Length: 336
Ligand code: SAM
Ligand code: SF4
Image 1 (cartoon, helix red, strand yellow):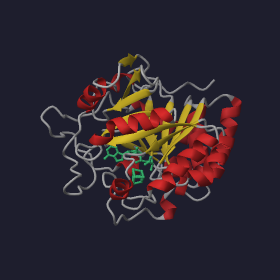
Image 2: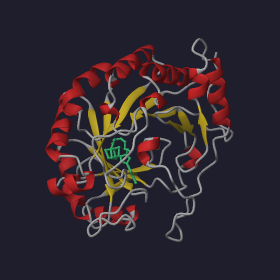
Image 3: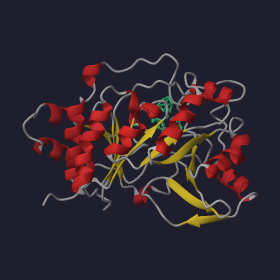
Image 4: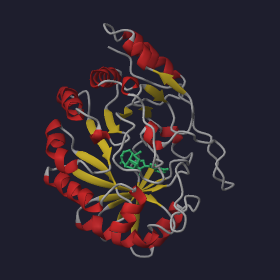
């Protein structure tokens, strides 16, 4: 039996997020600049390398795989990778294969994803207003994404929306988005924006946090909120709206209160393993993988060494309205 991955604080590592590309067909203002330079192809893990990497983590006890990016569905041949992970679902080693997507390619891929065993997708959508959507994503078009949601639901996948909460931008849509999701039987999670991208002056100021405690209080004026005890080992906290039955999540990525149950690590598209979203510490797993085409043992060793370095928590400090543990990576690098 291979020993499972346990970090120095006795947290089992069962959840791997994998960024399969740094590229994207959108340019969301809080995530990317308009003129991004992307990595040369040879830096990226190939699809075969991604398979080896993920299969090794699964052998070491990872049960949940979330594919992300950049936009995962713009990576060429990505369906091949999803299909290759199906064998781990079928063997029972992997309990969940899922992805986070901007939805732009779902019309094309929803059926294939469902056939590969994807049961749920997280979709990022911050506004239901076409103009605002075009503004926040720069290159995205709302109707295309809405058709993507329809396609995913038609294919039988559960869709959860993730919306970045920005004061003065989508604050006025709290109730419309909640109702819209309720009508479609979708849960909705709000993410507190991390100050990493650029500001659009006027109606989009990233330094104007819409504190999720305020958002929750606003919601409570219209609905009966019941706290849900379930924890996914991540930064999300959930309530149920009694009137609609839907789940509403709140993700405060920089709060400390979830670190003690953290069960996840993140792999970038170049094979760097980040043990904590809020720390710069990482381990290069591409070298042990590429340098040893015939054996996964050096990769396994490197993974174990990295997990041994997983920090207890991160160093952000919002208490004085400034971020002390600064983040220089964009979410498109670590995959959010
Ligand atoms: N392209 C896919 C998407 O948009 O869903 C997957 C990658 S994206 C980096 C993952 C998530 O990170 C998205 O839900 C996005 O809204 C979120 N994100 C990106 N930049 C962020 C920031 N500065 N603060 C908070 N969330 C951010
Ligand atoms: Fe692309 Fe997702 Fe970043 Fe938007 S949030 S630019 S869709 S990677």
